[in-house]
Image (cartoon, rainbow, N blue to C red; front, side):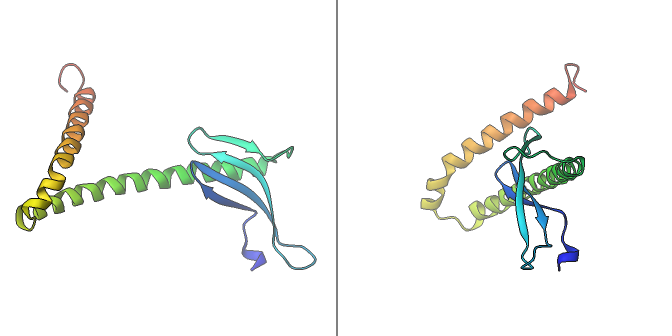
Length: 135
């Protein structure tokens, strides 16, 4: 197993990760994990842990992880929006075919407000994309 391990491990956390350097070669055959940095994925900030100096290899690996993680999160975000579209379709079908009047009373105002807010943003963003001359 030790031969298959990467040099770095990234413990995911909100907005980034804690970065560890792995050392599989201890005398007790225990895997040692030394935290060397923290990463903020929103602003790309890499903070060395304590007074450690990061090597060029460390920085290269961390920057690669940031790029991969950012791409993964962007794909997930778009996938979530696609699921929202499906959920809206299912909600429409539910409201039309299955919902009891009391259930509709409970959710109608919140759904209408959320849909109105979404429509407003989408119309504004579409107008911005098309520009002042309409496209």
